[in-house]
Image (cartoon, rainbow, N blue to C red; front, top):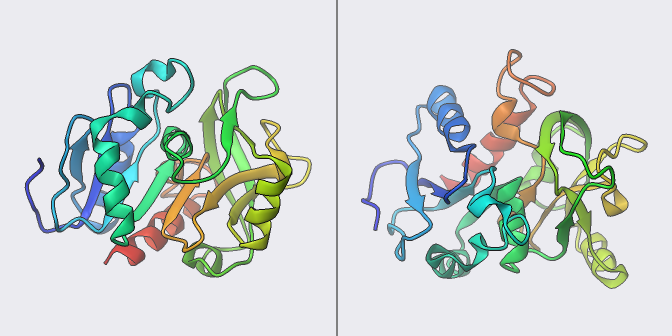
Amino acid sequence: MIRSQKDPIALMNFPGSNCSYDCHFAFKNLWNIKLQDVFSCDRVLAGDIRGLIIPGGFSYGDYLRGGALASWAPIINELQGFIKKGGKVLGICNGFQILLEGKFLPGALLKNTSNRFICEDSFLEVSTGPSLYQRLLETKISLPIAHGEGRFFIDKDGLKNLEDNNQIVFRYQEEKNPNGSISNIAGICSKDGHILGMMPHPERAISPFSGGSGTAGKQVLETFLSMCL
């Protein structure tokens, strides 16, 4: 169990998570917020936590599939209760894979159509909808991506549900789809907007010196932060 601290946002760590430092750096340098570390073997979340970030990386070496083994970790049982109580969740890259494998969001992430690991800037369109991300972010942004299994897939009925419920938050711009994702999908949210899963890395685009369009990542993280405070 982690100790209760002042700042109400936690970072979920698994063996193989390698983007935790980037998230810590972003929140500390932008808002002087110290993220509380939570680990895969933990079975209890501190009661003061209102937001939870699942960072990128290769949890459990991506054996079976990206995020598959992590979705069975003890902390995931606590995540279910956290969400039911209204907790806010941001899953980035491998974190998105874990949310899908755990059935917290619909769909799946498959190998890129190129069968290659892709590391580059992605050009995104932010869809209209009721979630805070869709209301506050600029309509076109750029964020870095780095993945080998980032091709979002869902069946025809599932895609229609996502569209009807305005759950598609990010789409790769037309003709700039890097991995073959269906309907150019790069990120989706839950129906209530409390859970966001995305392949691009906002924590790597927090200043003009980092990546993407400079500060687009800061806008994404700031929106998540505003939901948690």
